[in-house]
Amino acid sequence: MFPLLFSGSALRVRSSESDTQRFVNRVLQKEVDTLKPVRIGICGLGTVGSGTFNVLTRNAREISARAGTDIIIEQVGARRDNPACDTSSSNVTRDVFEVARNPDVDVVVELIGGTTVAKELVEEAIASGKHVVTANKALIAEFGNELFAKAEAKGVTISFEAAVAGGIPIIKALREGLSGNRVEWLAGIINGTGNFILTEMKDKGRAFEDVLKEAQKLGYAEADPTFDVEGIDAAHKLVILASIAFGMPLQFDKIFTEGISAIEPQDLTYAESLGYRIKHLGIARQSDKGVELRVHPTLIPAKRLIANVNGVMNAVLVKGDAVGPTLYYGAGAGAEPTASAVVADLVDVARGFSAAQENKVAHLGFAADALQDLPVLPISEVTTAYYLRMTAEDRPGVLNKVTQILSDSGISIEAVIQKEPEEGGTEVPLILLTNRAVEKQLMEAIDGIERLEAILGEITHIRVESLG
Ligand SMILES: NC(=O)c1ccc[n+]([C@@H]2O[C@H](COP(=O)([O-])OP(=O)(O)OC[C@H]3O[C@@H](n4cnc5c(N)ncnc54)[C@H](O)[C@@H]3O)[C@@H](O)[C@H]2O)c1
Ligand SMILES: N[C@@H](CCO)C(=O)O
Ligand code: NA
Image 1 (cartoon, rainbow, N blue to C red):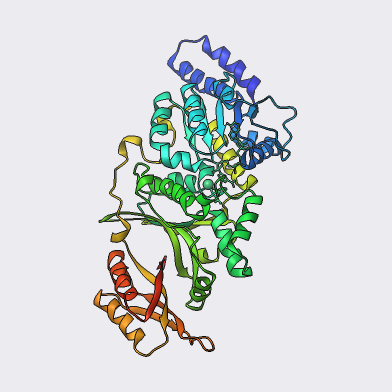
Image 2: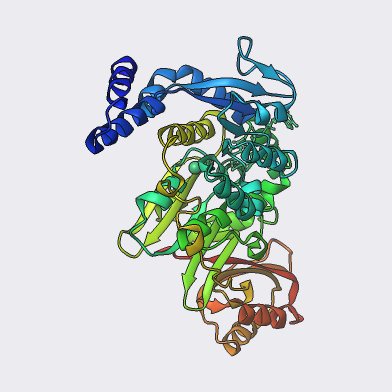
């Protein structure tokens, strides 16, 4: 590093008046500015907070060398100490708002979660002219539009790489790496807990609740794990991805969300025998009709790379018009994978510390005044293929009646699994794979089929995507 060399030179040229020297002076002064350490305040010392503390401490040399300056943990705001990290020589406060107001803190790292205290904290940090780094997808998805506007007005940035797909640098890839493309669609396994549960259920036959408990113990799950299993967490992430991919404001209220809690082990098995896997996907697609924003269990061909993403791993498949399909893979949750993304954001903040706001990458990749309020299609207007599972009385002609109703709605059948009844039984499972149809037509057909006397109970329907 060259602080002394440059600070001496900067002082010398400052006494001259010529244009060239004024220019040199500005450049050199900038070098001096970027050499000031960036002082951060970590708020929340749970899974991600402790991971961030440890990664910053352990990799301090590499991080400084990359950032061009030191990143110093000036203060930690934590309700209680966490044995996962040693903060004994840090300045720790029990009041996170003290961090937001601390004049010696340049960047507030919000790792509390939720949308109450975290929102107030971020607002307070912005009002005090501090940059914010956060892993909080709920906060960004639900309040990002207003928070970004506040940050831009104050000339500070909110960075949120850790909020989507944990350690995978997907925000950076979409905002910067793919900026030459019109993104046609993206599909992702973006909840680590959900993928971990589905994988353990399929591979080891474990019970849902048992795997969920393990995910909580490993620090993967949200404070309220229904966010993971009911798809809300994935919906938060998908909204963020779609806004960056298509250049539209965040519209969390428009997303269709279905979780994994209704998936039965038998569906995982039937899907497999049809050549598919069931993955919980977030899918965003833009077409002439509007934007699809949906999170739901999905059958995808077993041969696709993304179908083989297991455990806590996440993957996002992005189709750009120029680049074609691209796939991003990595750990979607956990202390250090998530810390990896938090620290990358801190390095970006440090690098751009003295840059003018207009020279920084916009929060959603597109300039704020270029965001378009694209219409979001209701799920009833979405077209996909379907997996249907029903229980039928074991008597002749039932399959014909079912296929007739589907065909009356313009839906044809791609594959059928019909099982023999169990010893002495009179009911059989009937599994159908349909061609692509508009959802409202499919729902009408399901209604008709459920009214058949020979069909017992409700029909399970799971959407099918080829992702080709
Ligand atoms: N765990 C992961 O793998 C992961 C991955 C990506 C993003 N995230 C996000 O990161 C954030 C933190 O998640 P986590 O898993 O570390 O949660 P966590 O529950 O382990 O940690 C949150 C910490 O914040 C503390 N806290 C809460 N309110 C506070 C207050 N008022 N003052 C001081 N401390 C307070 C809690 O005591 C806890 O230690 C969430 O937004 C979450 O969605 C988590
Ligand atoms: N609970 C989240 C954490 C990462 O965002 C998950 O399991 O994916
Ligand atoms: Na990420």
